[in-house]
Image 1 (tube, rainbow, N blue to C red):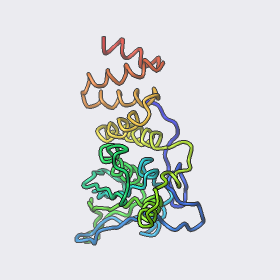
Image 2: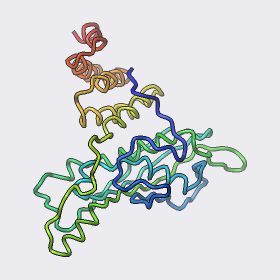
Image 3: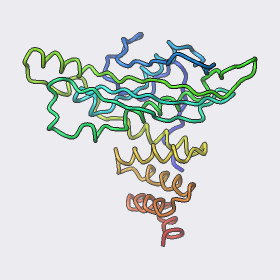
Image 4: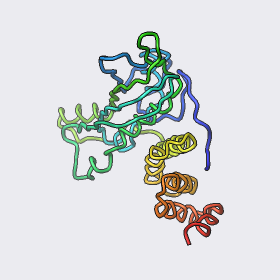
Length: 262
């Protein structure tokens, strides 16, 4: 399998990020994280709720279309933490979008284009925190626990759209989307590859598939997607992925196509 670089985190570390706020030592957050009131003992982030919120703020990548057109999103994610503080399961439960008044929805089907990406980005962030949790404790015994985290994706463009609409002005999109290259495809590739090495094959497929949809020109993404699909016996779909990697010039994929797919 192919790597760009190994994912690692600590609170305060800034990875490739693409939120639409200006950097500062203590940035005002345009992303909010809410933790539901616990009913049973739950795992806690080792650096506290403020540390978790800061980590999310510095690493969240708001979807490009959301940043550009000012579409806010929210998603509930179920996360399971084992007895040593590792993330062992992440699952999106709900996802919603909030369109600013006056947004020209004839431009494209925003819901179709964005659906799933808010949840997937939140899942990516949670997987990155694996090992940085204190496990739940019941009667002095560490336990596997599950909780639901809510992630809100709030954009400056949404607020600008609301202001322009209220004033009767024509909306100017893209005012706060200033990055030349969106890192989402690379981030999803890295997460999918990391999950593949850890044996979370279904989750790896989800991220690697999203990566190829966002950027279908990377042979490594197709190759690792093929490896993940073979691990769960999706052999025909694995061959399709290997063939795409082969077309993009991957010699190892070409060998696998010859060996497994012809």
